[in-house]
Picture 1 (cartoon, rainbow, N blue to C red):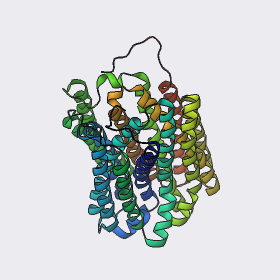
Picture 2 (cartoon, rainbow, N blue to C red; picture 1 turned 30 degrees about the vertical axis):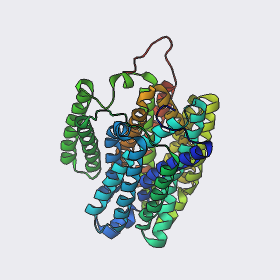
Picture 3 (cartoon, one colour; picture 1 turned 60 degrees about the horizontal axis):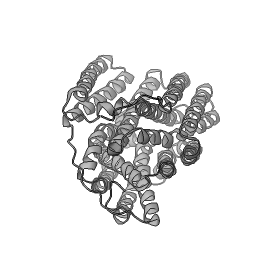
Picture 4 (cartoon, rainbow, N blue to C red; picture 1 turned 90 degrees about the vertical axis):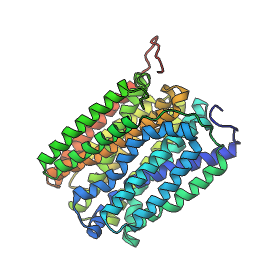
Amino acid sequence: MPNTTTAPSQSRRTVALLALSLAFGLIQFDATVVNVVLGSMSRDLGGGLGTAQWAVDGYAIPFAALMLAAGPAADGFGRRRVCMLGFAVFAAATAGCAVAPDWTTLLACRALQGVAAAMILPSSLAMIGDLYPSPSERARALGVWGGIASAGFAAGPPEGGLLAAGSGWRAAFWVGVPIALVAGAALHRTVPRSPSQPRPIDYRGATFGAAGLALGTAALIELGQGRGTVALTYGAAALGATTAFIRSQRNGPHPMIPPGLMGRGPFRAAVTTGLVFNLALYGALLVVALALQDLHGFTVLETGMALLPMTVVIAAGSIISGFLTARTGPRPPMIAGFAAAAGGAVVVAAGAHHPAAITAGLCLIGAASLAMPAMTSVALAAAPAEHAGLAGAVLNCARQAGGALGVAAAGAIYSAAGRSGPALTLTFVIVAAILVVGVRTSIGATTVPEEVPCDAG
C-alpha cells in the first residue's frame, strides 16, 4: 500500500473503515443537528433568524475554507496524526458548544468544530483510499462511508428534536463528545502510521478563500434580513476576495488546487456536483425545519419526527449507491439521485400547506444520497494517486461551501418572502431547479473524453 507502512488485516481494515465512517457521520450530524433546535437556542440565548443562521454557517465556513489547506497538511504531517488531532479538537469544541453561555462563545466553538472537521475529513478520505486501493473495493467502502455519513446527516434533525425535547438543546452537542473520543481511539489502534510527505501550504490562498466564502454568506444573510446596503457592501468585498483567491491559484508558487487537477473535466464536474448537492440539501433542510414550526405549529420534537423518514432514505440510498457504483459505474446512481430529489422538491413546493406532502417530498429529496458515494468515487478516480488527500479536500470543500451558501440563500429567500406558505413554495421551486442542474453536472462528471490526454499538473 502506497501511503502506509504496514498493510492491516481484513478485520482491522473493517474496524478502521467503521471508525473513519463514524468520523464523517459525526461531522455530518453536527452540521444538521442545530437546524431543528435553532428556535430553542434563540429563546435561550436571544437573537433572531440572522444570528441563528450563523450557528449553521459558523461551522460550515471554516470547515470549507480550511479543507484545502488541511489536505496538504495531512499529507505533510501524516494523515493518521492529523485525523486524530482533529478528533481531540472536535471533542473539546463540541463540549464548549454544550456549555456556551452566549452566542459569542457558541459561535466561536462552532467555528473551532469546523476547523477540526476540516482536519478530519480529507485525511480520513485519503486513508480509505489507502486501505482499499482496488476500485471495486473502494466503491463498496465508500458506500459504507457514505451510508454512515448520510445517516449522521439525516439523524441530526430527528435526534436533535428528541434530545432538545427531553434535555434541552445542549444535549444535542453533548452526544458528540464520546463518539469523537471512541472513533479516535479506534483509529489509533487499527490504522498504521502514515509517513510524512511534506507539501507546501498556500496560506495566502486559504485566507482569500475563507474571506470570500464568509463575506458572501454574510451578504446573503443580511439580504434576507432586509439590510440591502450592508448586503451590497459584503457582496462587493466577497467578490474582491474571491477574485484574489482565483488569481492566487493561477499565479501563486504553491496553489492549493493545481491547475492540472481542476483542468480534468470529470473531476471538475464532480466537484461542481458536490457543491450543488449540499447547496440544495442544506438549504432545503433548514427551511423545512423552520416552516414546520412557523406554518404548522410543530414542536421541536414533532419537527424532528417529521424529518425521520428522510433519515432512512438518506442512509439506505448511500449504502445502495456504493454497491450500484461498483456494479454499474457512478452515472446511474448520480442521475437517479438528483432526478428523484428534484421531483421531491416539486412535491414540497406544491404541498407547502400539507405536512404529509412535505414529508413525502423530503423522502424523495433524501434519495439524492444515491449520488454522494458515486460522486466521491468519480473525484478520487479522476485525480492522480499523489493528490488523493487533495482531491477529497477539494470535493468536500465544494460541498461544505455549497452547504454554507445554501443555508444563507434559502434562509434569505424564505425570510424575505415572508416566512409563509408561498415563501416555502418559492424556495422549493428554486431548490428543484438547482437539483436539475445536478443531473446535468452528473452527466458531465461521468463522461470521460476519449483520446484526450490530461496532464495531472
